[in-house]
Length: 392
Image 1 (cartoon, rainbow, N blue to C red):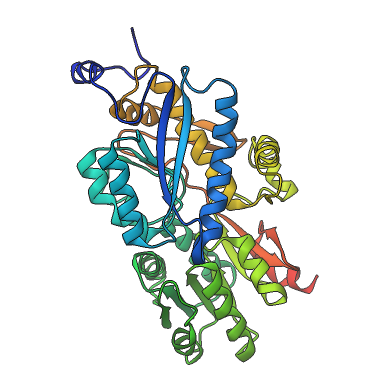
Image 2: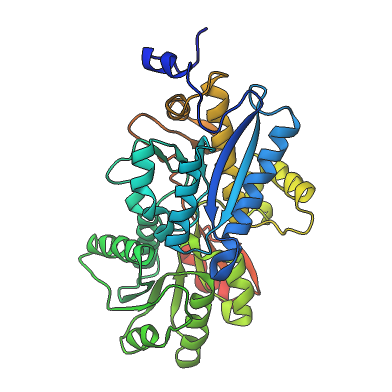
């Protein structure tokens, strides 16, 4: 039998041994993510998006006669719990791959386990550079990175808005420090540096010290690397002191939940996205599968509201399923990784595609920007018109 990605002698030998998490009728995929706690919105939504597509595939008979069972464990965005969940997956030997992990501090914690077990880790809800450099052969990133998000944001702030005094408010852990470093690298391109830095401890709303550090500076804008609750708290308190600050958040914040928490204080807040908000009509012009995503989400989760987080989960599942299809019926972990590496220019929109290679394990590079206005997200297409948008 000839497989699309080709098989080596070692692969053929491995076919004679049981493959963890794979039976004649089922493929078991493990996920540790925040389903409760202060990042519970993110894990819940990305899981809904992924499961909507996976359920759809299962209803059609699965992949090569096998249905996909996604086993999701709650880690509350806590690295030790995430580590324990992952150890359980590996010790029990009951999952074929890891999928849709949420967060930088949690996911970075399991990298040594992924390397040791040589298990695929696919489609994480984090843009951390540690999952990209140094190159990790078992890690598949679907989304753009935080470095790309902050670089694009700084470029627009400096070149389009003429802002030069930029502060950074960040979560004091691997996630926040990654975003801080990305911002510093971006500002270096303009021979600049943050005018102020403020931080908070993950899992708390204790933003006062970080707020004071920013407020004592002459910052014109604040780049925010945090989760939705502390970022909302920071913005509300900052607006009580100054009404002229520009606030920008990276995608992990969960734009729709941030907008809900902020209410009227959200007007003008900018959030970068790695997929555009599915609830916006213009997103249909950017991505092909929006109607299918909306239909599947409504079918499997009637109470759910469409949002960028669940849409990202949907596309993570699209990549996983496409890899499983290309890997063929004689499934191995090595074969799945090679199959995903064979995905080139996979179209997801008129000017948007997903591509991997043996040396490139990040499928998408596009960064979108949205602006919160009257509790809703507005896609930014022309930064020079931001002031005009506010007057309207």
